[in-house]
Length: 210
Image 1 (cartoon, rainbow, N blue to C red):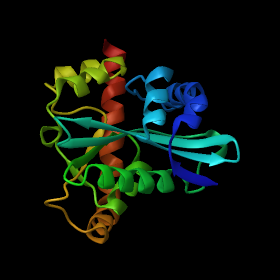
Image 2 (image 1 turned 120 degrees about the vertical axis):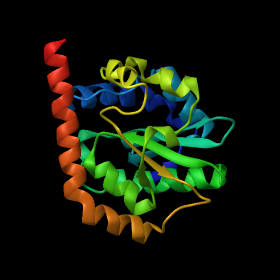
Image 3 (image 1 turned 30 degrees about the vertical axis):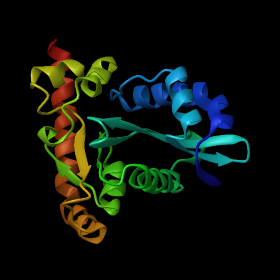
Image 4 (image 1 turned 90 degrees about the vertical axis):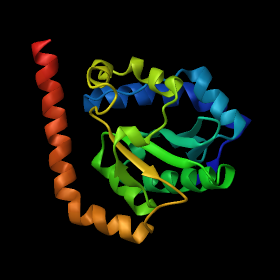
């Protein structure tokens, strides 16, 4: 298994990656911002992504987006092929994309939106902290990308202050150590798990009555 920064030779995997993103979101019953194969291929070609490979078979993927002239960086589109899940691939990819982000954009705040407790734990191990949506980018282009998500109406009904996703942020100028954030997550994991369950149930109720 190799986890590496992408290049033009990896664009052949773009369509497979997009198909798995959509299938995974449907299976989980959660929404994602839709990505096109062309967009993913561009990120791969530009070296703005990390890809995990097992020989010539893709095993996982994640890419970088920048907002507000590089003030914010998002590590987006994390996906692991079903054959390679629960083997630490996601953690390896998140570590690599975090290092790439810090290298290319050392002064940027790195953030992510996730509906998964496992991803929250990985982020906490890297030094991310849960934050309110108000601490994320205000770039309208970023929020417009959420329009393809099934939960977009919930986001807009709450004036972009909350949604099913949990926001997490790493601020290079003001952050706890990874050991501290990992410990905090461990202590509060049951609370986060309960909040995620409540969010999911609220969404189900809203969709039921719509």
